[in-house]
Amino acid sequence: FLNFLLLYMNTKSFTKTLIVTLSVPFSAIAAVWLLYILGYNMRIAVWVGLIALIGNDAETGVFMLLYIDLAYEKAKREGRLRNLQELRQAILEGAVKRLRPKFMTVATMFLGLIPIMWSTGTGADVMKRIAAPMIGGIFTSFILELMVYPVIYEILKWHSEVNKLMNKT
Image 1 (cartoon, helix red, strand yellow):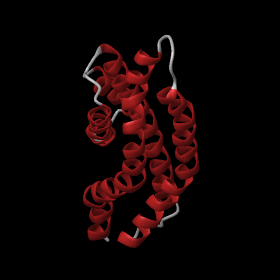
Image 2: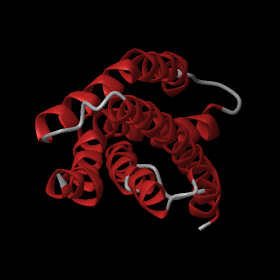
Image 3: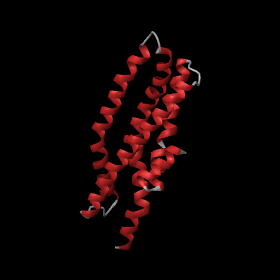
Image 4: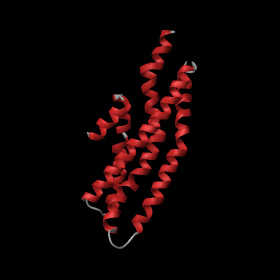
């Protein structure tokens, strides 16, 4: 709930907040599957990892929507939203600009978290349980943000704005 409230305060849009919040169940599913495969129980350390994953999902989701919004507004100012294809082109333009930063974020997190999973010694047991849900959820979050967010954004913008503009002219 707190995450939802903070997202709403950031985006000032209930719809965008729902889109970003959509990533939480998808990444949590992958996180839980990895926890199941590794045989980890739900302990406090696992919950800390899940909370960190939710925070990361929210942050990267907000940035993805920001890039798509900026590309959409630019296309709107330039009069390039006359049909569905132009809407798709504007959304693709914004999503492509986010591809490299998102890939770098995921790669950096994997490079930082994978060695933790191989670690042994003092504290390794706790750190593995923090890292496992993050590793599990980061990959699905990556796919979701790059493939599903643009589609949801297109559907919402088409039905709420662009299609109505076309019908008026």
